[in-house]
Image (cartoon, rainbow over all chains, first blue to last red):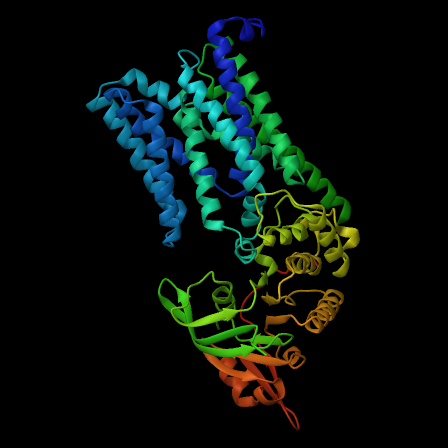
Length: 277
Length: 252
């Protein structure tokens, strides 16, 4: 078992550590809004939708980050329009998700023959993170913090009661689109380290678990942030120890945390129910 | 005096298909309007059009102020991590500076509104743990903080305990005395007689006027169709409506 201090000592791990901390801060905060606004499936689907764009970029020498952001924003816009036109958003999301994932695999294996990259894009990597990846993650953190401070009350009011939010004169449609766009950018930032298929591990799972016990939105944000950091750091150490990309251990930890909290709160509620019955 | 709420030849609906036709009325400041009609009769659609959430398919609406809206409580999320105070505080967002944190005056207004609706002691209680009547009062507190001249309330008394209903009625009376205009949708034909005017909707406007004149047997039948039983009594027709839907009234 390697020393946890290696994370700070070995240069390639130091970069991975910085990336994981940045993504955990972004994910801890953003996942709270994702969960409150019920965008968990959208977030997962945005990762998959971005995948074919990354394959094409990787093969054609375009910056994968720029291509990824373009595809993810286009996808967010499409989902937003489909939802506004009254189509069932989860159906539209599922349809796009399957098409994008299958398209990406076809492109990667048959057109560009870049099989090695596919694994990396889908499940992330500990090695070879570039300074551009770190810069996008840092920019995402700045955007998420700024948006949480300025738009948080509006997002909460919309998620709580959409009709009431309109009556309050809130720019509900624009605030919603900004959240979708922010998720799109954040997803692209997470793909190098966490992988397109596992972005939900940092943008959904922390707040999904925190929500089981948080009784206020500030508490949800704080607990979600703490969970994201803990899962990120332990997951990174596990990845280094077990020679894995960091995405899978972070995702497994997030799911375990959720399960433990769900069982604990379920048991508590059952006990309270029995006591009052 | 100019009307606080006006609709002229209003048709409104979803996806280009109108579900409500030919609504024309004007409500002066300080008037309480009971909006009666069956489920699917267009009450909520009228409110959405008045809020500007639905573009009129024909005609127009005009309001003297952006209306405060109190949705049916079952439309709100019980699992949402907000307290009664947080809900009341959302009313402060209507000041137009939604990007700023709540100010001290917003907090004071939210506390005052909670006190007014009898929830001063429940400020810290999670919204989902309030009773149905308390939840309705927390939403009413949010509307009070919004401090609008026009309030739209969608079935605020449905599934509410008698004590809450009495409190809500008393607040309606205060709001009327403050010169605010209230549109309150309801299924309760008897309760409608306590309002200044009734607006009867059944996919179109059936009647608009003081309840003593408007609520005759023909109007009630045209409004509710087969959803009601009319009990003949000397002097007036008494209607009992049969509701075919299930409200999730939650904890009482």
